[in-house]
Structure formats: structure tokens, C-alpha cells
Length: 308
Image (cartoon, rainbow, N blue to C red; front, side):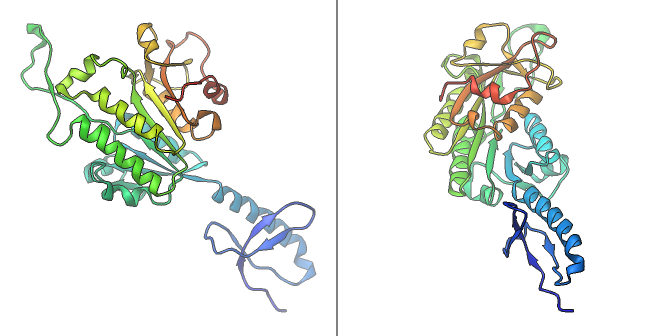
């Protein structure tokens, strides 16, 4: 008996009948249809399975996290890979960093200071999570037993202006050119104070350059979420009540830190709710055991009113 050719399927369930449409996309499952009436029941079950598989594949968003080799970036990358909602990608600076977090094919090596080197990583993505940052280093010879304060420096070519401004601008430009639907940018509280101690580290003015990149993103026309995290804690996530603020108000309170794992979770949750888009906010948490752990992120983002 003749058998119809194998075709990919898109299935519309608007009535008791299914409408079959051939597509070229590789996201869809394939099914061989038989003209035999005795196989009708089997085919109907296969159609249901194919529809479920097609829907699952086509609904997954591809998300790139840059700075995936950093302590917070690694958490975001891992969470993305563990989720069925996303196809994860990561961007790291060196091959060594790539190997240190598994060396998977979805990890790209690139230099954010060179926009052309990160283009392959952003092609075809739906969302971008930016977790790159300049990192100050302590000068050798500091002895805490002698009092005084340590001195810091940045490696040549890795100053905040080059990493937190030019590097983040390059990421925003590349993602916009690739048609990305949302960018989540993680910054730091303290940007309203030009004399903040972090700006003095290595004379890098790191918060000033971070703030400049945040403004560039807000003006880019791409839907954005800007998260200005407080002091980062290497503590368990998901067990604290998270707090939002604006204009560094939280820095004047006792609740001005937040676990890295919670920052990572907020990044990913921001991709799921319209209420997170085109908003900027400070993020901190209550102490563990105080308050109610944050679970309703739709309500969490809905309370935010500030766009910058």
C-alpha cells in the first residue's frame, strides 16, 4: 500500500481535526503517514507526541550569558542548562576558562573589547545576560598586621573604561544587530555616588563606567532589565526575602547585600515576565530567616517602577 512522504509537521488543535503543514525547520519531529484506516489511531497518538515535541523545542529561548566563567556567571550558565525553557550559551575570555567550566560546545571564547570576536556567540540568540566586569587586583606586599589599606590596580587593557564601558557597549551593539529580544545587565549599587570607595580602586572609576553602560542600554531601544546588585554573598539562594530599591537607598540600611545565587535567579526570572522589561533597580536581601523567601517573581517585578 502506498505511503505518503515523510514531512515535518506543525499541528493546530482547534477542533477534533488536525491541520498538517509542511515546514523546513529542523525543530519539528517527523512522522510517516499511512493511508491505511487501521493505522488511524496509532497516527493520532503519534501526532499528539509530535505536537508536544515540536511545541517544547520551538518554545525554548536561546540565552547567552557573558562572563560565564565568573562566580555569578557560572551560576547563571548552570541554571540555564538545567532549565527546559532555555538553550544555554556562555561566553568566556579564554580557552582555559572554558575548560574550567566544562568545555561544552555551547561555550564561546571571545574578547568583549573586540565586537567582531563576540559576533558568533550572539548570532541566533533571543536574550543576553551581561555579567562581565573589570576586576581590580591587590598589589603585592600588603601586610594587614602593619595597618593601612591595600592598594589595587587593573591589568593593562582591562580597566573599567575598557571592560565595563566599551566591552558592555560592544555586547549591546552586537546583540541589537542580531535582533535580540531582551538584555539583562547586572551592575552594582553605588553608582549615584561619584566618591564611592569602589571608584577609587586602582583609580578605575568602575561605577561611573558601569553607569554609563547602563544608560547606553536604556537608550538602545532593546527591551532591558538592569539589576544593580548589592554586596555579593557566596550563600545559598532561594531562602531569603529579596528587596528592591532605587538610587542607592538600600546602601543606607542594614540590608545591602544579596547572595550570588539569588542574583542569578533574578536574571533568569527577568526573562519570563513582561513586568521586568524596561526597568532598573537595586537588589538586596533580608537576612536568612527574616521575612518570607521570594517566590512570586511576577509580583516582585511588578513592584518596580523605575526605568533608570
